[in-house]
Image 1 (cartoon, rainbow, N blue to C red):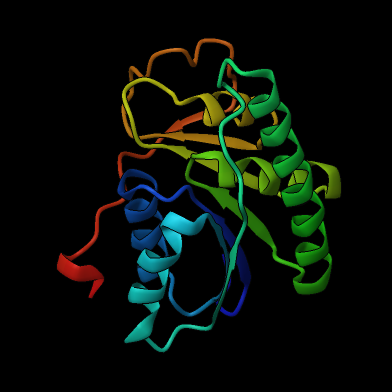
Image 2 (cartoon, helix red, strand yellow):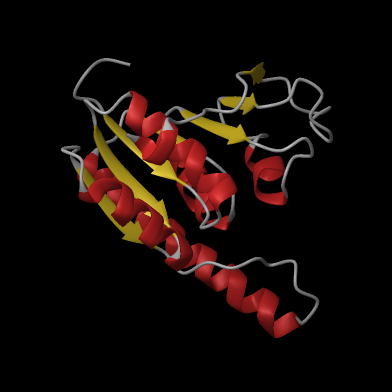
Length: 174
């Protein structure tokens, strides 16, 4: 990836999704970053960027898991994902990122679907030994599914796998 590229990073709000994303941003900091996360992830990203000279924009999308058993909760989750998809398409058209990198969690779903619709390359990174629900879905439509573990479970139907290991960061993302 050349310097001064725009990269859209999407990550759910837990440390398991956020910290690998921060490691990648810290490593290739000479680019512009568009970040999509949820309310939980906003503080992680704001704190990370607060003392760095890295061009970025953070967007918080309200999304939740559709795996709840209550029909009304499933409906609300699907509605939230559709709104996130529309917002993401608008952000992509406005900012024109060269690649979209998802790190899991439901905030990654709309950006990777939007990438597919708009024919932008996308990468999903799975940090766990068992692929999560969002990444399992997205691994089928992304250009590449990067794995932290060679033997990641439930990835048998994916043919676009690469073993990368887990991006690590220096203490406090220095």
